[in-house]
Image (cartoon, rainbow, N blue to C red; front, top):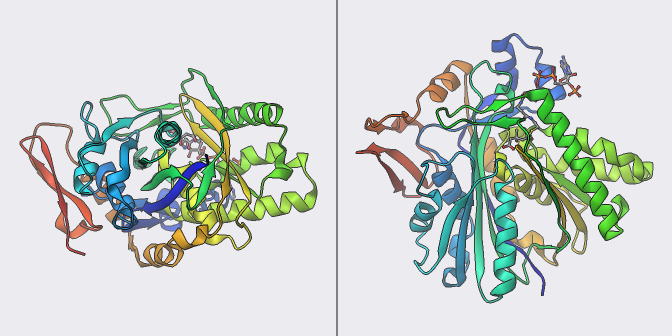
Length: 390
Ligand code: HMG
């Protein structure tokens, strides 16, 4: 039985900061951000958006088109959850109007959480072929104003429906994964800002890719020649490229050019949105499928997932006949083009206006409400969510 991604949805906040503006404000050559890091714009999440609202907004792209009575599992993969105990997934389940006869929870392992959810969903569907699973990967990447990681912030979500005989891409049973306790990036519970050992984290990312890719080749007998494209976890778009460069010399120059062209297409959305942690690999997949004229049904795609701390996994998928019918390329491009550009001063104001780490009530600024699902505030320590009229 083939199992894989049957539907794909994505969402990112309506506001962004242009990285040329940010570079100027920080006294940095804009080419460092645009070429050296590979980012042009960065999504900015106002306090009315969190992993619950963004996750629900991503799933809303297809939820009305699927048979929700078949959904038996809902998983939210996130590292920027809204509660230390209760999962955001159960709130998403309610907001989307899903039935209650569902197993619903949240999982965490840095940016690997989306892949952990996907693989758990794959196993679930293998055991229950008549059922489907909703996997949501949502995050807000925050390092702090003027911090070393500021240029690699971002916000957004990807939602995937996993089923038997999927319409978009199978997930092959060929995963190679590796876990090792390292301190390259983490976020202590007292703060909403991530800590990163920048250079060390990039070295570890590349090392994990090299190790799992070598083992994948040994175990499957496949080489880069067997892939039409490889998608990478994209903390920033140059990062995947740095890892890819270590493997590309294994193939001919023509093949390298084709793979690099596909890589560029897989980075179109991330370049404008930034790091969405758990969802970044899957945002790359959406970007590739919606911006690449040359991948086609039957093609094998590689997927490299990395979550600091750290877990790395390489697996493959096969594109299905008619997959393009289930994408939203025009709507996504129009949405990204219609976003509101914030000045650096506005971005800093929005960044600092956040739900407090305290028992106080809080109201989100109504001028920054966007998307179908929003967080209007906190009352008596309970977060208040609303569905807005479309
Ligand atoms: P930095 O010190 O600001 O940048 O840190 P840099 O000095 O290393 O420069 C970056 C690149 O820009 C370099 O190119 C420079 O040469 C180039 P490279 O050597 O890398 O090819 N450059 C220029 N290019 C053109 N024109 C110029 C110019 N100037 C310089 N004028 C860093 C960058 C990414 C480390 C920092 O932003 C950071 O710490 N970010 C957060 C950590 C991170 O994203 N790590 C990635 C790997 S870990 C991961 O992927 C997991 C993660 O997603 C979290 C999770 O799992 O949950 C982060």
